[in-house]
Length: 354
Image (cartoon, rainbow, N blue to C red; front, side, top):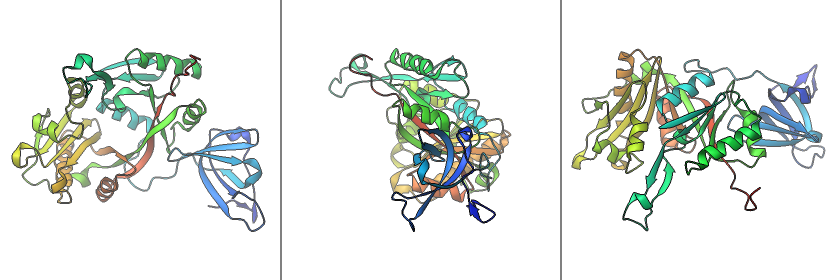
C-alpha cells in the first residue's frame, strides 16, 4: 500500500470524498512516537465531527478519529479481478433475484419488497397450522432488494418497508451488498445509524462454467425439473411447504440434481437455475456419511453440462463465510468472491410507540 508523495506520507482526503473507495493509515490508540500503524480500505461513508467511518469490503464499519490519520487517498472504485467472468454487482443481484423468486412482491421506486410467507405450527400446538406462526421461507425471498432510489426520503422509505412486512406478520429485512463497484456501503452505514442490525453476511462467488462441467459426474446423477420427496428429504430446510416449493421451482430454467442413496434418501442433491449466460447454483448438499467423496463436484458437473447445453457460460453461487468446506471446493472449481451481501433487520419497535 503506497501513500507517499515525494517520499512523504500525506492525507489526500477531504469530506468531499464521502462515497468513494479510500485507503487510510492511522496510528493505533495512544498515538505515541513509535506506535504501530493500522491500515483500512473501504468506502468512506461519513466524515463528521472529526470522525471518519469506513465500510470495508466485508461490510464491517471502521471508526477512525481524524486526529489519528497518518495518510490517506482515494483508490480505484473496485480492485481488479484476478479470475472469473466480468460482471457488475447489479447484473449479479438481478440474476440471483430471478433464481430465488418470492411469492409476492411490490415496487417502491427502484426497491423491490419481497415476501414468501408460510405458516409453521407451534411445537406446543401440534393440532394444526391454523394455530401456527407466520414465517418467511429464507431471508432472500423475504427481504427488500434495493437496486437504486426508493423514490422517497430514506426514513419514509424505511417506514413503508416496515409497515409492508408488518402487514404480513414478518420482520423487515433489507438485503445489501459491499465490496464491488456499485455496491451499497452508504446504505449500510445509514441503516446501522438507524439501529438496523446486520444478522447475516455471506459472499457471492463467480466462475467460468466450462471448468465445472469438465468434472466427472459419473453415471449416478439424475436431473429433473421438480424436486421429489426424496430430494426434499435431503434438503436442509426440512418440511418444505407449498410456499417453499413455489420458491424452489421458480426461475427461468430450473434443474434439480439427485444422487440416489440407500433407504430412499439421496446421498447428494443440488439445484441450478439457467438464465442467459448465467447458471446459478444452490442447495448443494451431501449426506454426512458421503462427504469428501466427490459427490458435490459430480452434482455440479452434471448441472453445469446441462447449463452449457442451454447456452450458459458463467456461474455464480452464494456461500457463507464460515463454510470452509464449501469455500475450498468452489475455489478448486475456479470460483472467486465477487462481493459480500448482508441482511439487515429492522430494530424492534419502541415500547413507547415512538
